[in-house]
Every structure is written in C-alpha cells, then in structure tokens.
Length: 480
Image (cartoon, rainbow, N blue to C red; front, side, top):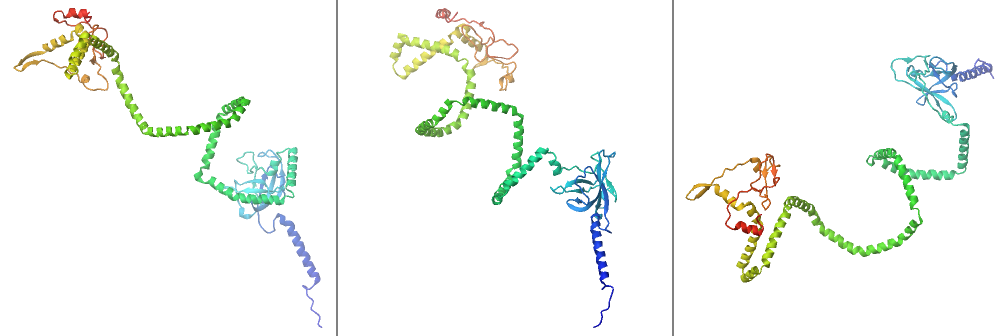
C-alpha cells in the first residue's frame, strides 16, 4: 500500500479553526443584527415622543401596518422651550427607500397587541417643500400646528380610566364569563349554527332596508324630526301623561269593573238588536241609493233657491201694505156677498157664463175702485193726468191733434250700469192715499234719491168735481 499524501485542507487542526471562526462570525452577526446588518445602509432620523412607556429597543416602525424600520435607541430628555415636560427621543433606522421624508410627516405610538407591546407608526406628509434629512429630528411642540406627534388613545390608556376597584370587578366578570362558557362547547356550536342560519334571512331583511325605493333614510330623518318636535313640547307631554295617570286612577273603580263584566251580555243584546234592525237598515241603504241622483241636483237647486230668495226679498217689503189693502178689498167683497140685494142679483143671473163674467167684473171693479178711491179723492190723480195730457196737445191736422213732448234723457239714468247714477231720482211706487200725494211732488235735491222722499207731500192741484161727489166721499170717509 502507498501512503496518502498529506495536505493542509486535510488537516484536522485547520478544519477545527475554520469551524470555530464560522461559528464566531455567526454569533457576532446574530448579536449585531438587532442594530441592522453590517454593510447595509439605512435612513436614520430622530423623533421625540411625550411618553415612551412599553416601547423597547428594536421595536417596529410601521407605515400602514408594514414594517419599514426599527427603534435603535430610546433616550430620555429634559424639558425644553418647545416642550415643558420630560420626553423621550427615539433613534430610528428606516429603509433608504423612504429617504427623505416630507417635513409635515407625523407619527404616534400605538398598541401592537393586548399583551402590551407597542410600535411607532409613521404617517408621511405631502409637503413638497422641505424634507427630513438623514440624522434629522421630528420634534414635539406645544403648538398643535407645529408638533409632529399625533394623540392616540390605546386600550391600556382606556382601561386606566377605571379605578382599581372597577378593574378588579372587570377581572372578576371576565373570570365568571370564562366559567360560564367552560364545558359548553356544544351549546356554543349550536348558537353558531343558529346564527349561520339566521344570517341569510337577516341579509335579505337588510337588503330590503338598504333598497333606495324603501327610503329608509327618509324614515330615519322623519323620526329624527318627529323626536325633535316632541322634544320641544316635552313639558306638555309630561303634563299630559300626569293628567292621564290621574284620569286612569279616577276610573280605577269597582263600578268600572262591573260595567266591563256586563259588556259581554250587553254586546249580545246589541248584536240581537242589530240583526233585527238589519232589514230596516237595508231598506234605508236602498232609499239612500235611490235618493243619490236627486242629491246631485241639490247644490244647483240650492243656488237657484238662494237666488230666488235674494231677488224676492225686496219685493216682499211692500207685501204687508198690499195685504192691508187686499184685506179691505176682501172685506168689501164680503159685505157685497152678504148684501141681500147682491145675493138676489147673483141668483137671478144663474150659472151662465155671462152672469159669472158680469158678477166677477162687478166684484173686481168694486175692489179696484175702493183701492184707488183714497188716491183719487185726496190726490185727484185721474183728473190731473187727463188735464196734463190735454195740455200737451197742440194743433194738428184732419187726423187729430198732435202730442207736444220734449224728452230729457240722461244716458247714465236710462241705461243699465253696475251702480245707479249719482243724481238719479226714481220713486218706484209713490204713495198716494189720504195722508200723502207723492207723485209729481218729489223735489230735486241735487243728490241721488231712490224711493220715497223724506217728509210728506199733500199739495195737489184741485179740479172741479161733479156736483155732490165730494159730499158723498166725505160721508163715506174717503175724503178728509
């Protein structure tokens, strides 16, 4: 056999030394890896925080949840002009891709988990002018517009609000909750299964509520407005409820209970009565249906009736006077009918038409003469009209005399207008009786006068009556 040639690489001593050097290098790299791998550049800046509690060396620096660096140093600092309280300055090692950060970059300390670990969150700014150089500092400041740290309330700060006794009670509550769910895995599984089955119908309900056509927003807005309106009258509502309570307390009596107990029997009797009244109600319903066409004409008929009443009211004013004169005429007819001579005359005439016409004309003429007797004897209307008509006649030809007339016409007084003329004089029914003779005696006042003039008028022109007429009129009481 030939002896193998000895080399350096085959020496056990050399292999042992190389192995020790590799292990030492690995230990060194693992030791310094916390501060960054050697020969790998980083972007280093300093930030000032008001409270570095539970922050530790090599804690994460994140942007949007992604790790972009670590905290290398945590140095306490005394108060300064910009910040009157002690604070901590953190030295950060960031990825070079972030260099340089804008000058309006902000940051805040956040809770990483419920176990208490924290990290630093960076919120890069958007300002184009100015940047944080390598080795620069983002400082604290009492002015909210100049400081870079943002306030943030974490779970540990929220829990510190509770007093020690409250926190102990919360811990006890959590312990009881743990005991309550212990050994109830199958029940929790059933609850989860039931919730899973509930989610599908619940999703459909939520879809209906979220549909624009359902106007859920309008319902909420209306409810808000209704609540606001009720809040304005809250005292009145409270008073109403108080009074309602007093009312309910007043009706809380034994008699009310007895009345309620008797309601079933009363309802039974009322049902029986209504059943018996059903035919009558059916007939009434049919009658109403038959009257419905006529009811449609009632508004029109009511308007016509109103127009008739409105138009007839001025006409009804002289009716009492006419009724008095008609009463006198009827009294004369009654006297005539009671006169034996008249009775014998009517019996002699018989039932032929000529006799009936003659008797009717005689009776009517008597009534007319008695009605106009006062105007004739006191006012001499017939003779004056004939005299005035004769005085209007002038020379004519072989056919007869001519009527001499000069009409005076005012258009405002002779045409139809919404309102009477301001100087219109018109007496529709002049009074002509034993006390007055208004016709032809109305004086002109210069203003509008419609109807009877004020005062009395008894001055008339006298004509010569036939012999003995005045004496007979005085004896009959027709001439004063």
